Image 1 (cartoon, one colour):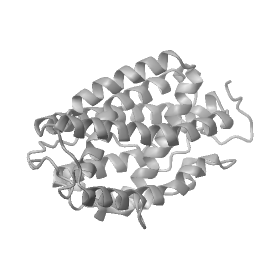
Image 2 (tube, rainbow, N blue to C red; image 1 turned 90 degrees about the vertical axis):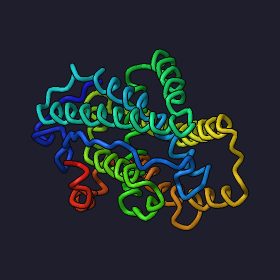
Image 3 (cartoon, rainbow, N blue to C red; image 1 turned 60 degrees about the vertical axis):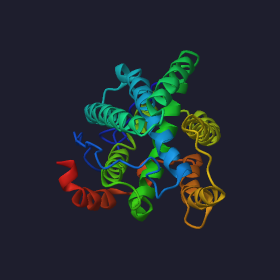
Length: 284
């Protein structure tokens, strides 16, 4: 379905509120020396590694699914947004590949996670329609933008991390917010089926954490690491305790179910500006 332009539509179909700025930061990750780098906790450390391992193939699919519809997009501003989105996602994939190599040097199988996840993504893509692929990208971009908002409003959660890893995660969060409506705007223009989005949101809210947990378990098994009960309790508090990750983000995830929802209903623009100032040296 291709939405027809009408006199009542805005002059541009892009609803991005802030510039989408591709950057090329450089980190050596020389300060990433401890295997259990997240406060000495093996579970929390493997959680970060599992996420990072999934990013390169995930970003690749996001780019490909949006490109499937570019012959239908006519709005110059939205086309420009997509180009910047692709540049940012490509750089995210590169930086996380470099980070995964640093994790490999600590004994993790982060690159193996990426390779396995890429096979899963390719098999999945072959079995789905173009509309399904774009819908899942919209859902995952929504989820990552919500997690990015959590990261920028709760930066103290990253205080135990090595500085380069902390900076990378905050940089990634800034850019996820900058381009958070691009795939959504393309979807609205070219597909427009909100019920399809809602179905995939409910599925991904189950599949994404289960997949991450399985990769986390695999990483620790390959390390021969058995988490202590103290580590398990800390991980549970990190996810489900007061102000924890899952508890904090769940209501924002579910906002996608609301009629008329748009990612910029939550205006993070000032938050992004503040963090761009904080990370100016790292991002220049």
